[in-house]
Image (tube, rainbow, N blue to C red; front, side):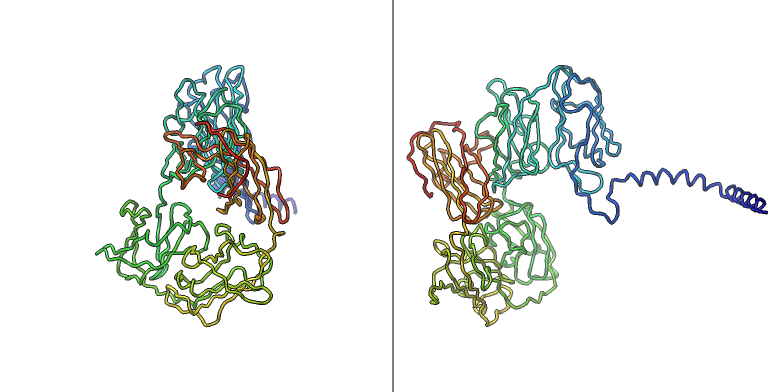
Length: 605
C-alpha cells in the first residue's frame, strides 16, 4: 500500500513538473542573480558600517620588480571600483597613451597597445579621489607601483611632510616633480610642464617619492581641488621649497602651504530663513572676524532698491566657517532680491546670487547671554577659552546685538580680599552674537574676577528687549603651575635674526619671539603656555620683506618661481607645570643671499 502511495505521489509530482516546466527556466535565471547578490560589496544589514579605506591588496607585476616584459598590469582592490573613476585616477611615469582599462568587480586590468620600452623604470600612481562603487571607501593617500623592464630599477627617493597654513598636517595634497633637471632650465610642474612624477600626502601629511633617477628635481605641492594636475592660483593653496631644486636623498623635506595668492572667497548659495534672515554659503571656510557687513549688498532685482543689512553671525559661533547668516530689514515676500559680495569694494567682481523674499515672520525669544567661564568656575586658563583671542572671557548671545551696547552693558571687577575693584577692558567682536572681553596684558594668573552683563542695556537687532536680571560670572584664573614651557636650541647660518613661533595645533593662537644667533647658534624659551600640542617653527625672514611683514613667514611664489623663507618645524606637547626641552631647530641656509651679523639673545618682536 505504501509503495502504491509513493508511486502515486511521484506520478503526481512528475505531472506537476511537466505542467510547470517554466519553473526550470525560472530557476536557471534566478540562480546567477542570487549568486551575484551574495557578492555585492556591501556590509551585512544590521552590522557595523565598513569604514576601512580603499586599498590595493595585490598587483602584477609587484612593485620593485625588474626584467618585466608585460602588456598587462593587474590590480586587486579591497572593494569594488568603477572603471571611469579608476581611469581618472591613473598617472604613468613616463607618460603612456596607448592603453585601455577593464574592471571586473575588485579587479582592474590595464592593457597596453604596445609592449613597454625596454631598459626603463616605470611608475603607475593612483590618486586619492579614487573611491569604491559602494560605500565611501577612498584611498587615504596616493599609491604607486614601480617596476623596470631592464636589469635595474631607479632607487632615488625624496620624502617629507606637508603642513597647512595653521601648521597642522595637510592630507590629500598633490606633490609634483619635474626632473632630473639637466642644464639651466628647470620647468615648473603643473605650470610650465607636465609633472614627471606625482604623489599625495596621507593622514599625517607625509609623502614619498620612490624609484627616482638620481639628480635634481623641481617640486611643487598644490591642493589640486579639481584634480587636473595643474596649479590654479585663484583657488588652490601651494607650497614651494626654500631652495630652487631638491636632490634625491632628501628625506626630511618640510613644505608649508601658502594661501596668500588665493582669490577672495566666492558665494556659492543663499537661502532665506525667514523674512529677516538669509543664510549664505561660501566656497571655502572664511575667518569670521575677516567678514564685515559692508562687503555685502542686497537689492531688489526690479528697481535696485537696497535692503539694509544690520548683522552677520555664524550659527556655530566658530572662528572659521563657510556658512553665515545675515540679518536684514523685513523682506517683501513678492519681490526678488540680488546679493552681491565684494570684499575688495569693487562691484560686480564676483557672481551675484538671486533669491525670492520670504513671508515668514520669526517670533524671536527674549534676549539671553551665556558667559564663559560660568559662575563659580575655578582655575580657568583664559587663553584656552578661545585661543585666537588670547587671554579672554566670552559672551555668547542668543540674538544678534550691537557692539556699542555690549561695551556699555558689561562691567568687570578684580576681587582682592573681598573688595571689588572695577578694571578697564575692551570688547572684541567675533560676530554679532559672540564677543570676547579682553584686559590689557591679559587676565592675571591665580586671581578672582567678577563679570556682569546688564541685558536691559543691550540693543538687539531683532527688536527684542533684555530682562532686568543682571547676568554675572564670578571665576578664578589658574596659577602658573597650570601652564607649561617650551625651551630649545637651533642653528641658522649667515643671518642676523631668526623668528621662532609656537602655535597651538589646529588654532591661530601663536606666540612669537626673535632669536639673534651668535656664530650660527641660538636658543629660545616660551613661558606661560596653555597645555596642548604645539608646532614650534623657526624661519629666516625675507630680506626684501616690507617692515609690516618682516616678522611673517614668506611662502614664496610658484610663478614665477621664488623659494619660500627657509624654515623648519617640530611638534611637542606642553603639560601643566612642565618644561618641554630638547626642541631642536636646525634651519637650512638661505639660498638667495648672504646674511651676516647678529647678537646673542631672544626677544619679543
